[in-house]
Every structure is written in structure tokens, then in C-alpha cells.
Image (tube, rainbow, N blue to C red; front, side):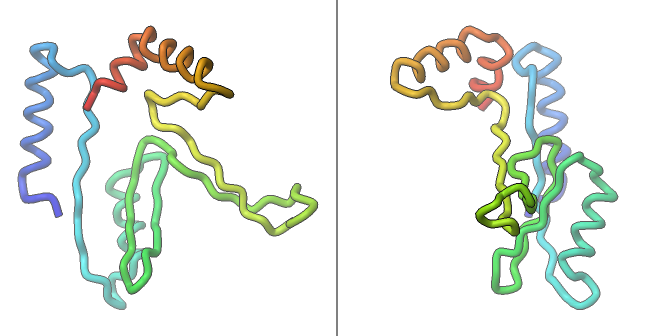
Length: 133
């Protein structure tokens, strides 16, 4: 997990960088680890996270062998839903990916790719997100 006070220190450092104009956006995160038991199943851990961090998007992924990944985010990365409009497989699950900021769909060929990359780089907001790291 994230060492004690590391997240707080990161927030304070980012605030200082914002103040002097070196940062205009920051994505900070923390890692927590917890042993599963009958008293703390992954669903309870997920509900606790959601109550402490009511971000609009959350996830709980079973990685197998009693290991789970639980998280919350202001951005949706993937959405899975059952579809009834698929006449070939009415019980199919539709998976929709949602690009993270600073991304663009591929073009139909290399020239269109280049135009799309150029349009990203010419957009100040998109460029800032691409150069944030």
C-alpha cells in the first residue's frame, strides 16, 4: 500500500507546484491492501470505499485466487452491460471503452492518424493532458 503520509505529502507538493504555475492538473492516487475474511468480503470493502470516496465510477474485479481489485475514479474507463438488441446473441454483454483524457480515435490510415495527432497537439487542453506526466 501507499506509505503513511505519502499521499498527504503528494497533495501538499502538488499545491505548491500549482501555486508557482508548474502544475495545472494532477492525478493523485493511493493504494490500500486488506486481508479478506468472512467479516471483510470484497463487497464490504467496496461499499466502504464508495462511502468514503463517492466518485461517480467504481469497480470491483475478481482477479482469482481470493484476490480482488477495488477502486473508485471520477472517470469511467470501461462499461459492461447486457444487451437485448443483439439478434444473434440476445444474452451477450456489450463492452464499451471510454478513452481517458488526451486520447483520440485512430484514423482509417496513417495520414488520418497524423491529422488527429496534430489536432490533439494544437488543442491547449488536450496537449496539457498529454504532457501532464
